[in-house]
Length: 395
Ligand SMILES: *Cc1c(COP(=O)(O)O)cnc(C)c1O
Image 1 (tube, rainbow, N blue to C red):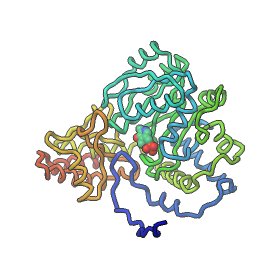
Image 2: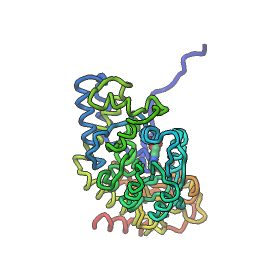
Image 3: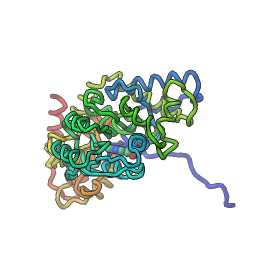
Image 4: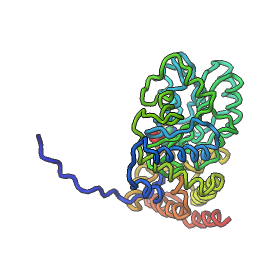
């Protein structure tokens, strides 16, 4: 056996997080995470569970009974949704216009589903007519779409149109709301979304660990009447029902601290008011957008599909995106990210989520990014960027 490793105390750098997630955690959430643990069946914790569910319904804009935090990151609530809803032999329609549609496909295949596609280029939303055609051609049982595509900075418009196409064909709709919940207008019930999953570390500004999921009765009926159990024991919603439903009996130990965290993060949403929170994201990210545009940079998606929580800023010609990202991290402790897949090297991904969606962060971002681009000789005008930012914030 080797000697005990000599590992020092943890001293992470003090970053400002404006990438695709995690976002900066609100100090009140960190404080909630340092409060004492109780057992996962403690009467006081049952009360916490009820409060989390109530706050989560408010944030999703739903009355769904089946609204729970799934233990794990956004991908866990995603796999809980797809793995439970898709039965072997079912067909799931998924989008090809970003990274996360691809992840939906992988999960649906592992659940034993047949996957069919509705195509759109990376950086564009789905077109309702294409969704209609795909339904007519394939008659899928489940339709998944990404409301806020973090890989491209595109917000899917006309969601109610898509869900009504699906319902006309008796299909269930699963929405990826990981980068929209708590930051961008989302009306789960009014828009006809049957299942929505999300994550805590994007617009909710909470550490990853307990991820929102909501299902309406129609979706839960399908889950509870499956012919064979879903392949994951851990994410089996018919078993999790025992813990989060009326019985409150043991399934697995809830990540107590993460449930405290999301409770506090959702309390912050309720205190601010969900509509006011959407408006803040639009205003602050709007100032970021105005600033980078006035500086001389473009945004990738058209204004109509602009996603306030994730700004896909075009990398100017001749600029090495990776070097600029390293520059802002090294000089400013500021995290932003580059493009993925079809957009690798072409965009910077600048998050403006939750606690990170504040005017001071926008000003900081413009300073750091402007300097990083000037260091590479790019033709940018940070002063014009600041002026446009201030004007947008003062509107
Ligand atoms: C981040 C993200 C996910 C996955 O969440 P993890 O917490 O990384 O597991 C899924 N979908 C979208 C749109 C995301 O942005």
